Length: 547
View: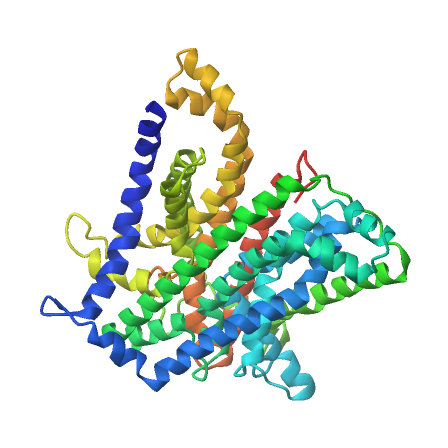
């Protein structure tokens, strides 16, 4: 009984936070769009879904998400095998390189591919080939962004499977492929499904990549919600599209939770010892070098070209675009400050959002430490919703709901960190929860028997064991806060833009200076996010040697 009371007490602040800054804004947008004079107008659902243009957006959203997922699995599964089974020099560095794209803001990814396949990009200069207004640019950018999801999700389990099981099947007469298909593939199935669902979720709700690379030709649900809200002020259509995306995300999260439970069952049935060997034979070395080539061409090349474009001034290579970032006089007319100020704004917003996310996510993780029934699983899934629900809807909802006392925050500096923290909380929970659940409950019980209060139990027992996980969670929350774009684009004030907002505005204006400044700001944003990731890698690999 006491444990239940403590758990509910820990959940009070997270539930209030999500109710005020997530559920309330989203419900307000949907309510305004589907009501007229206080009466619900559900006929708008039929009207919107009967629009051929909207049906085309729905079809493209599903099609590109499915194609992106299939292409990502095709490209990344060999890499997952290489990282799981092979031991080679530079493995930890290569893992860090693979993970860098995932924590990069989507506007940086879009800018990188724009520098590669867009007008004046490398392919355009060499062969006159432009892909920035084709679906291939979007698909390749999604593979770039989600490669690490497959490598880490599938590779993590693959490395825990005992290779002797497959070897035993081959001794009994099965061929190499038959042994892999009958022994390894069924064990990997839940992990592959979980990775595929996460990639599908991220690409289904894609915004920044499609906004930059798709142009006016291609539009996902998220992009269409933004257009209907910001360009046309058509709240009924935006509300219907938000509901569709919300239902789809709920279904994907439910499927993902089911596959995760299956994966956990699989992990208990197999040998968890990692067995990595140096590559042997021409085939294994070819697979290793092929993986290195894919990572170099698909993940590293766009970032290198992005950096190169940021230094390619009108009179040759130099720092002219970086030099102009500090001057408000040379800034785009949509800026009230120098573009470089967006960097300091982003760092300040990110620090504040990280602090909020650690408090909210830490309390939620502590409350969900003990495995429970449907209520606990439901709360766990609730905390994941901000990753899939339209950030555009949340941002616009902030503007129309947080405008009256005692929550009149429209002119408050804290509005942006609050929106960014919504995205950071799920990463904090996902990072800390497994570690908290691994703490021996008998230690807590012994401390309680000796008279320690719940707070002292947490301070003396849990905190020393989860300190590194807490730092890692802070790093992830900071990185994703820096890159948040969908909500921030609505609520960031012109005199306090964030880096992603500044990059998007510069890319939306014509002129070599605007383009060069966008590349320079994207490079700075990439360096900051990569630095945060490398710090995380140092924490992850210290003492354990694991990623």
